[in-house]
Structures are given as C-alpha cells and as structure tokens.
Amino acid sequence: EDKTRLRPPGSVDWDDIRALRRQWTRPLLIKGLLHPADAVKAAEYGIDGIVVSNHGARVLDGGLAPLEALPAIVDAVGDRLTVLMDGGIRRGVDIAKALASGAKAVLVGRSLLYGLAADGPLGATRALVLLRDEFDRVMAQLGCRTIEEIDSALLYREP
Image (cartoon, rainbow, N blue to C red; front, side, top):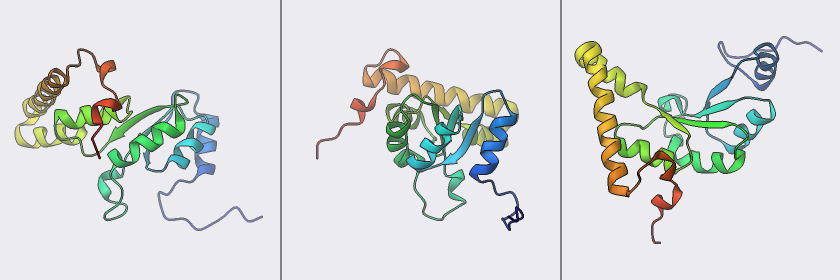
C-alpha cells in the first residue's frame, strides 16, 4: 500500500497522534477538538488532556463556540483525560462559565496579548489582575468560596 498520500501542509491525523504518543512519554495534550467523538478517541489513544478550542474560529466561519461544545465533551470523556478550554475568555464571568461547564482550567492568552500590546509587560500583568479580580467578584456573587464549588448547577435556567 502506498503510504504517500496528499494532505494539506501542516495537517495532522490520528495516525500521527498515535505515532507521537508512542514516541513522547511525557504528558501530551491536543488542542482544537470540538466534537465528543474526537475527545473519546483522544482518550483511547492515551492522550493526557485536550483543549476544547476552535482556534479563534479560523477553521470554519461560524463554527461552534468552545463553550457550546464543552459540556458534551466533558460528559463523553469523564475523568479519562483532563479537559481545558480556550476561546471566548474575555472576563472573569467567562472563566466561571467554562469551569461550571466542566473545564478543569481555561486558557487566557488573548487577554494577555491585548495587555502586552497596550502597555508591554505591565499591560499583560494588568490584564491578569483584571481577570483575577473579576473572577473573584463572580465567585463571591455566586456564593462560591473555592473553585471546586463552581459546578453546572450554577448555569441552570428555567425553560
């Protein structure tokens, strides 16, 4: 069988993930998953964690937001791997929503980048301080003393 196949430059498929997992014995995360079936496959391939992300919606215009995909992915994989979320985190309340939807942590790089662009390292630090302070206020408003107290019950809305 001819193993040469045409693929877009920089593309990765599950065969590549399997080979990487065999070679890399340290923790391995995959970023860019939005479908529960892909998350389950990542767990089956021995991946340690995933980052639910749409890469800033650069892949598909109007694609699914990570926060929309997150609960189904968390339900599908349970504790078999660590689930993080990236994208759409602009305020402290966004962090709380992601954690309540099942993320173990969130990535906030864009906020840091904006702060860095505005005022260098001090701006990046200020962006982190703003996010932390907003998140602290949201936790207080929700009545949560620890991050572990944030759960999906906080997202419940009457139909």
